[in-house]
Structures are given as C-alpha cells and as structure tokens.
Length: 72
Image (tube, rainbow, N blue to C red; front, top):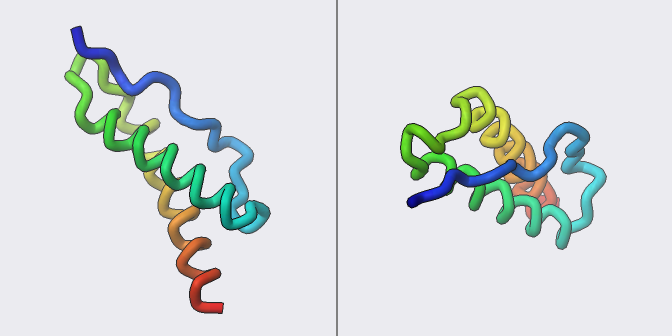
C-alpha cells in the first residue's frame, strides 16, 4: 500500500538569507523531494493542496536565494 509523503520539512521559521550554502542545498533537496512525493501520492494519501503550495513557496524562496548568491 503506497504511503503519503509524510510530514514536510519545518518551514515555519525558514529564512533562506540566514542559511549557509550547505544548509540551502540540503533544505532545497528536502523540500523538492517532499513536493515530488506529495504530488505523486494517491488521492487518499495526498496532503492538502494548501500545504503543498506552502512548501512550494518555501522551495521557491530557497531557490531564489541560491540563485541570488550565484550572481554575487
């Protein structure tokens, strides 16, 4: 029986500007993996769409910070 993606990484106090490169890379991977699993989950195991959107927004913020640092 397939399982849902579980709990997402904690994004409540996530501030990408305060993370170092390694932390940004790690949280980016965790968020991206969770979103992929959430989107592929069966309807019965799929997290609420709002939660998926919230994690996607956090992933976007992390991606923007990583891109910004590469241009510096």
